[in-house]
Image (cartoon, rainbow, N blue to C red):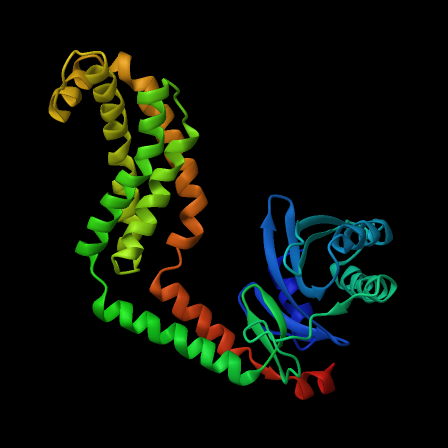
Amino acid sequence: MDIIEFTSIMERDGCIGNDKDFCGVYGDIPYSVAFVQGRKGGSVAFYLRIQFADKLPSRMFSYLRQQTKAYVRLQRLNTSKGLFCVLVTTKKIWPFETAYDHLFDEIEAVIDMLGMKIADVCPICRQGDCDSFAFINPVYQKAHAACVHNHNADIQAQVQQNEMTGSYGLGAVGAILGGLVGMIPSVALAVFFDLISGWLCALIPLGAYYGYKLLRGKMSNGALKIIIAVSIIAAPITLYLIELGWSILEGWGGFTLLDYLEYMLIFPEDVLPALLQVLAFIGIGFYLVYKNVSKNNANVWKEASISEAMLRPMADLSEEA
């Protein structure tokens, strides 16, 4: 399956969307789907919001996988907080269009069999009597139109406020302070307990991000660059603080950061392995925080605009279905 076939099937079923993401209603089931390009063709991620007891998601996934194994491969992506998400890859002997229809028949069957129901409370106000279907990333779900309008308006107002008052300078100061706070656990553990934990270095980019945000840094592409720069610069500083602490505790006295940097240049073989290890774990920390960092003002505004554009009264889509 390719993106062209996927798009044509989504449009056939009256789904709304753009690019690789679509939303629709199958019977009484609101769902969103996203095309995922792979090395050997495309797959589709299905998202549903379901009300269930604690252990029902696993049973649902196992049942679906058993019932649909002849024509699709299912990979569980997420079953937390009411979100049921599976990655669907069709087998060669089955066209996606046929597999797509069969899959929804089985989803309806397992929902009835396990006594589940599609979530019918608004995800914003947590109240019932929903009047619309809304795309609240990444799920198309029941909601109140007024709640969605107000939620998106609040988000866009926050974006406008940050664009007007956000500061790269203050954000950079916050990132530096946050990065220093993120260094404390790894430095303290090494100096006072003689234990080196690379995993604690992952806290450095987390601290830099939250420090940047706390001091109201401007959330644009520049934020990403500042947080990366602070995190990388923090690596040799972390090693310097550890060596400095050891030196003071041993009674050898202190030395400046410039002295340590000079030592690094003269004897790189003594420092490089530890430096690369710290950078590797900083990279892991940045990976964990990247999703938040990448939510810059432009992306947040776009997400709110898409949500607003995809808002539909339930009566309209139920009639079309």
